Image (cartoon, rainbow, N blue to C red; front, side, top):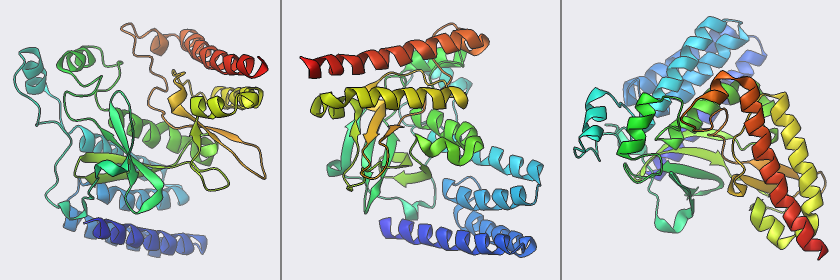
Length: 335
């Protein structure tokens, strides 16, 4: 099954290269014809709402943008987002809401959409496990050391995915999503895409959705140091290198300026969400590897959504919490 997935990805990359060359030579008509043809083939094989169709939709939308057909591109991007969201949580309507209120058994209905054409499902084994958070587990991508897969925990097992939390989310839509993948996918499809390459100065790339035996996952770049080793999380890096705390402070200040410039109010100071990429011939880089909390504080009152000054104050508070943690390591190195 994994080989079929890789074969499809190779085909997608080949089509992308062909389209890039055609667009570079201003052959937009031919590029549009090829993109439409490939999209129709994918939809015929997989179905219109299959996540593996969305790369072809992206290709078509990008050609529209090059032709300044912004409305057509926007319609496609909106549809792609819907497909991504439905992949992680197909539907949570009145029946699901009532089943949560009255505690009916609802473990299987919304675990992530099952697709009839599962020929491209890849198998994830326990030895690929990298880490576990409140709502997701992260695995190494089988056969690709430069990628990892984030997968939502099974229904009713995530911190935000309980009947009580789902009821609150329905009544208070500004709260954290019970699917962290849906939440982060929404961020990457909207804010990150609009920022373009500037966003990846301090963020890993997202390579889309992959279907696994554990459910649908989001595929991300694994950050590596210049020597090829995987970059370490902030706390682990400082434990090994407390004397570099001052340098890390400078990196955090740079990231703070970057987020303010691009209006990326990240409400998290969890050191597990940051890695230090060590570079031999250039400046080290602080990379944020979890973006689902941008613009969302998960408070019962949506003050940060209503009042920008409150949001900035909360963002500054999280920034100060992070810098305090780093200063503590700096003190340790001087003792």
